[in-house]
Length: 261
Image 1 (cartoon, rainbow, N blue to C red):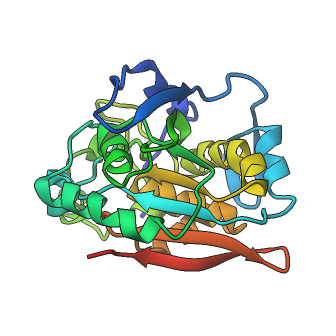
Image 2: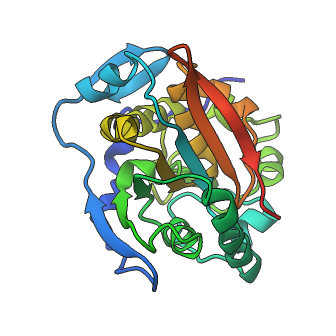
């Protein structure tokens, strides 16, 4: 079965154009805007899409401090297995409990900086996990979840029933819907930008990224120098913590999908 075709300008839907709000209590919010220049269509380690010089530079070697990845807590849609891309829905009560429980896991690191997706489920998770107690929660639009286009709000079984074959998002992609949709390579390219921007901070101490299931899995594959489709093998639960690091200058997974509950 052929992949679903997507327009090459699928990244045109920019979540930074949306007003994410001022955030809830316990977190100070700033914003980082995705760079508008320095991008070109190219291929680096399996990443095909708009990749900046900064993203290329990141591949020169890992940093000395760990990169912490936090997936947001449970939402109504994640509970049902529905694809939740740009739809901005809140945490459930269980999701808030998961976020609070992350405090203890995160307490073992002296986090230097925090970057969060602009969507409220990620921002609220960061607040409840205590990351905004002493640090500024800086929003980075390149951490936002995959734009799922026509499958937004649908579960994988629903999509497979509609299409009539064993659809897999990493193999077949998504079609445009209410939003343009994205190629997996486009998600990898923009998460590479997020990695490039925090790379200098990792020389000073641990950095924590709070975002979403697919965007963090693809970011991790990019960090490890793997093709973005390798993220299909990285399961990531709601309200979990993962730790990326290095060993003898080789990017590594130190811990993956840790749940505090």
